[in-house]
Image 1 (cartoon, rainbow, N blue to C red):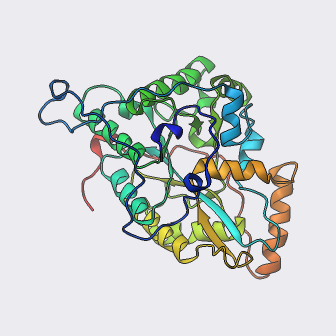
Image 2 (cartoon, rainbow, N blue to C red):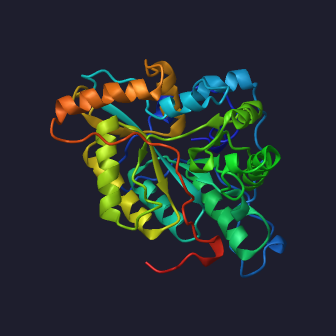
Length: 355
């Protein structure tokens, strides 16, 4: 699986082999994405981690062609992004439930590598929306953070932009908001060798002006529809239960997780095992099950079979009706919404090494 097909603004359609991420047997090796030249030894102090040097990105294709490979929301429309997070339209008898996993607010020097290891166990490709400031500078923490992100990229995970310092973009000036997006993108490009195509605003809170800026950058706005509020709670049991309840209700979608705390690592491990145990079997296509894919394939599937509803409220009403027909006594969970307040993410330099 070619690394830069996943980062640069390319329009090459996904092949069936590259797109079928799904699950592989535990212990399978990660896709071969090539090797990186070693960083010059003189540029890194002896106590610093060994860094992979960024590789020059391939030539970029036109924006019009790029949208063919990642679905079609070139205007970064907010309402459409919320609908896209629900996944492709599923008829009442369709068993395949498409899921893609996303992680916000990293990298963590301690917990992101643990998440990476768990994903590798199941052969799952995820998307990491990183905070740019953790990659900036020549401190030991910044160098190690860059290596963590490079390792994710080397495994074939997508690296997305989550702003420079997790500012709420609608609460700052437009100039500051665009700086948050642009400078973070530059830092990611310097780390992995290509600009990030996907963007998630902190708290899921963009506005029309920022959408226009993202469209001008040819960035894809990515939101979510399944959350367990792991940023608020350290109770892994409760977060896991909420995630699976919402997945059952939504029948798949974009899952929001975080990779900066130990309880979220535990939740990720449990969720991966649960999705594997409840995986979709193509031999029995009408039997309910989950197929975990990368974000690109997920959005391509959405483009092939978009939700037929005018807005999320209309879609959610139909989904509640279907859910209650299957679970008459169970209350339907509310839809995912923008986060009201900031997750209390610890500073990178002070992440605990316990657990």
